[in-house]
Image (spheres, rainbow, N blue to C red):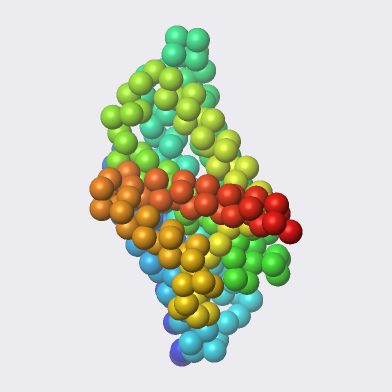
Length: 234
């Protein structure tokens, strides 16, 4: 019986992703973001439960990737698709209105590619190579929900499309990104993580929902800066 518990939790993640996608299609981004966050909670606990119960399995790994692509790939892509369909366009782009929103779903494809690479990459035990899909989904969900007034500007369609392409690149990039995993609690060994957590708490307290997007952007910048500094010192 216990071997089915982690897969049941993973299925809850998948269901959350489906519900989030439905809300995104109906133009209710706040509810879509809520179910993306719930999916992220289930995604956190399914792996932990499998390890605690000692019931990790190949089928669980495949199911987890499928659920993650729906919740963290398809759902945020659908949120972007909806926004690109209703926002104002520059005059030069107006003839492309029927086509451009579908660019959003390129991100779902790159999310699937990132998840497939993660399953085969043995370098990502204590960190990540490329942007994790939950972080990317939370960035776009929080940006759309928390910065809705920004997307009223005519050039925002171009900015969003450009942002989607940047996200696609980050998902499959070779940029090492740290994970919030602690072997010890000392400051010297975890200075980067503590700095990130403290600054993230400040951003969330000040900006709330838009702060989530800022935290993800800060995570990418801090990871890239750390990689550059380590290369220069080596």
